[in-house]
Image (cartoon, rainbow, N blue to C red; front, side, top):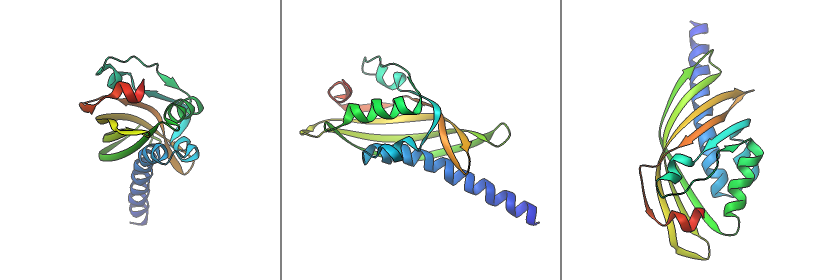
Length: 159
């Protein structure tokens, strides 16, 4: 019985840590906290925002590497865009040997121009994520963001 209890505790902790990687992703942007935002990614992370951006006719590149992702997103919003992210409907499926997981979530992301809050983009985005164990925590290795709907003007926010 102790082995079974330990396994359940480990699985619950892993699930909480995996969800926390998504929360760090959103809150790191919202607080403009590069360290918190970076802590959500593996060093070799990939972030694919292309499917979401295609919905309004944009064609951004695939973002590769934690440092590049962090600098691209945060510098693109710096002193220009305020954000709030709400992460819901998280589903976690352990894969491989228990050190990877397939994750889906629904994220509502509000983006406002700092100087003109009437210019905004509200996005409802399904996320598909590959999470990996990184020591005692979990991080995002791959993230693909699609878009179900949006209101406002994403072109004004994302360029």
